[in-house]
Each structure stands twice: as structure tokens, then as C-alpha cells.
Image (tube, rainbow, N blue to C red; front, side, top):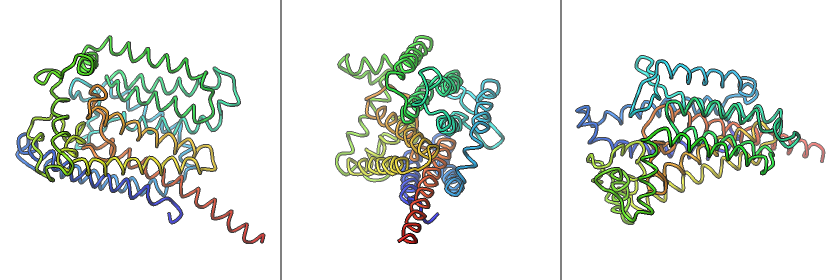
Length: 377
């Protein structure tokens, strides 16, 4: 592990540490109110981070060749869990997204998005779009991506399905597909999103609230715009340096889901512009190092795997931040590494470990090349 990019590990762990602090600060009041325990969410997040460290270390040492060979089976298992979810899933906030396995709750969507990236890297290495005509080039990988996204959409979970579809399209582009070939899949994805909105009134309500906020001239602070209004109050009241850790007011049950979807709002309120900028900087650094690992990869599978995982983390981060700042409708997506959660945190830790593994193989290859050069000279 000595040749890998340690920044990938340090940044993932650093963001998780920041998240642990902010989860406790944002959830203590909710823990007392709901469970009579201010440490309820803190203790669970601590256990999840410890598990995440184990997953991070395991993926950092994993053999990419083994992962490549197991890619179809990995995707098959994830799709199986999504199918089981339709029969035995747990409904939360109107969506069927959880499988309860005793003391452990699993969100198969997170596992499926990781498995899809691994599968696409496997497929596109063997069938690069640049060497094929339109339909054989992009049809099979995007059909698989669309099928997985469709199972996620059935929960219903439009935001995760849309981001998975976008990740698939971007990975096909990274593999060398022509831009004009991607126009049809993009149009089909957009039409699917519109259809989902039309057939799910609560999703359409969120979009209408967003559009009304920006083009109607005002937020409805006592109705559908409550979350956004409270989120903007939290961020705006933080000023340059914030109210101080633990000094925020919106977590006193004013801002719903303060420890999950809107944790960035609490970061802005309690640490101010400075703290929010630090969090954004850490995320940006992680994305940069991830794309650096992809760019330096000598194997197409490693290149596509690192690129896909980095894009996925970045898309989730951008979506969460846009929701918190009112630039997108409410989606329910967590801020990677920072928000309270189990499955999402473990999958992101696995992604960071795999990014490190790709960078380590890059370093090993470069070290071998330098050694051969010295021997030749």
C-alpha cells in the first residue's frame, strides 16, 4: 500500500470525521426528543464509520483483477437485492428503500450503484465504443444501466435513478463514445424523468415548489417551502465564522433531516463560511485526486473504474449541495462521507479504497518502469 495516493484515504477519513462531529451536533436534540438519548445517532454513526474503515482498508488491498472477474456476479447480486426489495422492503417516507436483516438495515440502491460502475468498467474495457458502430457500442452498457436505474425508480427513488443513469452515460463517454451517439440516450433519460414526475405527484410537487421559489418570487415558508426556507436561514445565519459548534438553532426541530439530507446547512450555520469552504475544499480535493488516479491508470478497467467512482461521488455531492442551497428540488440524497447513514457511507468508503487501489497499481507500474530504466542505463 506504500505506492498509492494516501490523500485518497486521508481525505475520505477526514470527511467522515467531520461528518461524525456534525452528525452529533445536528442530531442530539432529535435523539433526546425521539429516543430520550442525545447520543443515539452518534453511537450508530461511530459504529458505521468503524465498519467503513474496515471496508476502506479491505478495498485498498483488493486485487483489481479479481474485482474485474467478479464484476458480472457482483452486479447480479445487487440486482437480486433490488428485486427482493420490491417484495420485502421497508417503507420509509413513502419509499421502499430498505431491507431489514435483523439488527442491520441495508439500502440495496447504494450497493447497486457501486456494482453498476464496476460492471460498466468491465464491459467497456472489452467492448470500447470507439471501435464499434452506434447500437453495439452504447446499447448493451446503457441498457444494463437503464435496467438497474429502473429497479431503483420503482421504489420510487427518482434522484438516485437519475444520477445512476447520468453516471452510466458519462462512463460511456469516458470510454470513447461519440457525443452524437449519446444524444439519444440523454433524450430517453430526460423523457423517463418527465414521465416519473407526471406519475408521482409528490415528486412533481417538489419540482413545482422549486420552480415557484425561483420564478414565483417567494418561498412558501409555512408549506412546501419549509425545508428550503429553514435551510437557507441556517446557512445565512452562520456568517463568516458561524455560531460555533453546538450553537446552531435550526437543529431544534426547525430543519427536518438536519443530520442527513441537510447536514451542510448545519455546517454553514455552526462553522460559517469558513467551515463550509473547508468541507467543500476537502470534497474537491478528493475528486481531483480520484480523477488524477483515473488519468494515470495504465489499464482501461482501472481508468474507467476510477473515473466512474469519482464521478458518482461528485454527482451525489453536487446534488446534495444544490438542494441545501435551493439550486435544485429536494431529493433526499446524502452528502458523501458527511451525512448520517450506513449503506451510503460504507459504499463511499469502498469507493475511496478502490480509488486508492487504482493509484497504488499506477505507482507500482511507474516504479517498475523506473527500475527497468535504471537497469538499462
